[in-house]
Image 1 (cartoon, rainbow, N blue to C red):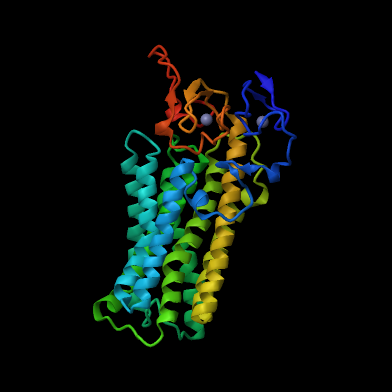
Image 2 (image 1 turned 90 degrees about the vertical axis):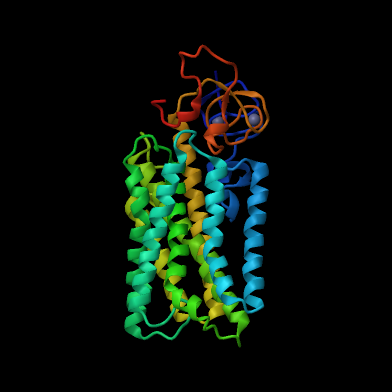
Length: 385
Ligand SMILES: [Zn+2]
Ligand SMILES: [Zn+2]
């Protein structure tokens, strides 16, 4: 064991520091300019959709998810442009939740009963979103994709509804917050983003039932409809997923992470600040939809989505660094990225990939040790492991 010149912590004698991912022998860099803890080849402070909402993907699989999201967005645009509005609306509503489900299935974060947990997170979000959509459909006599609201509606729909919706999105993740086995901050962020994306998709469909049934879509302004579809179907799930994911990451770090020093995330990581910021993002998204015309509303929502994703990324980054200080260096495993043996910790000592951000089920012990010792880090994460 030696001391890393960058993070000052004890690390293994390998090309990369297993705690901070620093390439040993290079000049130390300021913490803020280090690579993203879930993917050190990217900057921490940058706008990347895929590695932010899907932090536990191996590098080569990120490309497939990027294409899936781009292709889905293109399909929504084409369907809207040719006037197939009901199909385009459903496609827009299911796009992000569907990619999210594929991600959860692909990553398979826990080998034993992962399905129950993710079905619970996803379905609870979708049911609450559908109920919210049905209530709004009965109470509001304009559909979700058309404008023209009075001042009272704007106060209710622009402030109260998004805050209540945000609270409902948190219910599923908060149930899981009680379980000690989900003590990873990444778990919390994933639960939050999943529940929020499912909520938004189900709400859009439930609230638009009449629209889908009657097919009463004005056909004159197709470009404006495409803008509405992109704002509702792509930007809004990213805003909600980023905001609720970041808020859940902060909640996990505060209440779950066995942390001796919770100051690294600063005020941004305090649960009260995180919840208020998440609520503010949802309110601003709703207000921009109510008050602005289609194209400016889409631009505003894209900006809000960027802010939400960068915030989620900073929470993940700070949380992973913070957790990496807590965890003792584990037994050797085979790195799924480079195939070499490395001590189990936050980063691979040989290639620098973020091990904690890889699917846990894919981390295998380096040698077959005596079976009495729990050598696999599959359940690891906390210092008690
Ligand atoms: Zn280090
Ligand atoms: Zn490696």
